[in-house]
Image (tube, rainbow, N blue to C red; front, side, top):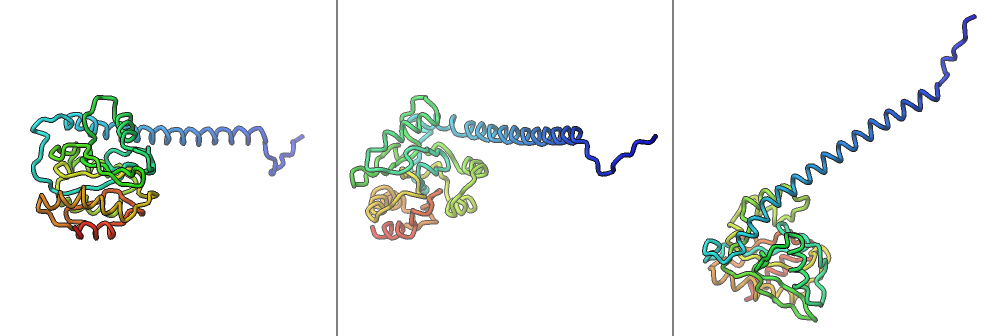
Length: 243
């Protein structure tokens, strides 16, 4: 006697086995993608370390090969979104003396070797309701990285400001032979007063432009690298031209 087979019958066990097999295939595929992503991130980090760390060390010495005698321009950036040496603490520039914390975090992030200087020539810090500009690198000491390094690093950076993109597009001057100014904190959230712009312009920027015979114009010899919404280039520009 022939056994009737219901065409709508579903074998639960086989179906479950198929689901498990498909699930395993999906998980394996996801794991492979995560592994490849991690390998890519590791490769990028290794590439950046191969660029940054050796140059940071070599450019820290007071050798005459690390000197420049006429600044090509001024580059301004914040510490949190820094294109070259991002530092995630402090996030905001408080009324405390944050420069020692910044230096500690920099050494912790980029190696425990004995550095004499920070890579930036000036750091502006807000301390007890007053802005102070600190000279943290000899002003005739080259910046550790150059324009070629900038291009390579920018390819691995998710977010670039319009000013940064413009600089990379036209490369108006060599960043290694320029004055670099650091603002402590995150320009997405920090608050910048008129006094801040005045101090930044009158102490760290305008004198450099005047000594070098450079134009007082943002986008010519002054560039803001990855400074975002809370930093106003238009307000800053008025204080540069006012002096």
